[in-house]
Image (cartoon, rainbow, N blue to C red; front, top):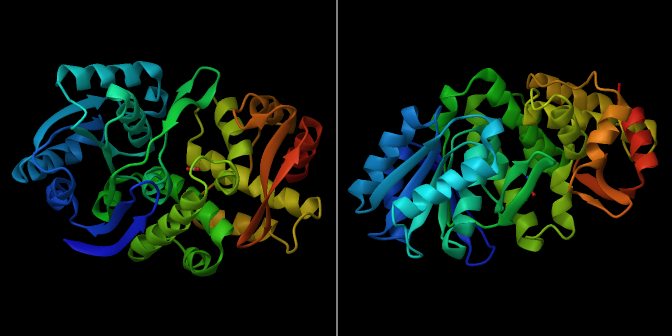
Length: 354
Ligand code: GLY
């Protein structure tokens, strides 16, 4: 095992994040240090479980934990109240008590749904995140946003429930398809645009496996800082939604045929081009952001018309009254929140569309 990075997110009691290789085989040691001799349930999905469930289970058992597991079908369309209910039933069938905990083993869907179930089961039990995709390592495993989708929109039912520990084993990234790998890079690039500095420089050097632990570490350090200052998204945390207003709309228009990362990449490119076109940025951004996204094999344009995107965006939960909060890049390393009307949002989508 090689630990490349160790960070601490200081929200609530605080939690450790370890990034490195060979962590899965040794995860039981980290977990049992926190929860010695307890019962736990590993929640995973049908693509990830055949690869890693046995390794994680054996490591936890060797460390003295009593382990059960629940595996649900893989896919973004499984992030539903139905799957959430099945996980709660499995926890009850396994007689988990308030002293016990859950482990999310998988990508963003698995982490979100496990965190939501852990946050609700017996009014809340702890959980550990073991993310296995770039997206879940750089973004969703940290910060405690846990939700499922409703037919009316994404992430409409959920809780803020921080994990007790996050273990990022970069060995798991070698089994990702190029599309799933690229998907996560969209969230890393989003974070790079927000943060600028060393993270942005690293991303500009291009996708290379050896740089991943550092990129993941920078993304988590940035996001952890934001979450420490604004856990419940009352202000600064909204910045993490850069590219997501248009991105969620694109996902919705495609009936979720376009992945989250691809949609966020297009959404980020739309905002960068719009910032240029509307003269809202202090430096030209459109071409630079497009070129960075393309280097990571991500799309930057959509066929859905601005009016279609607007309609889908208006169903989004981030709307408060008549105004919608959007995140506009001002310069690399500096983004701002703007409250816009639906007419102004249409102007933004139109300005950044191509
Ligand atoms: N993914 C954005 C956030 O956690 O706030």
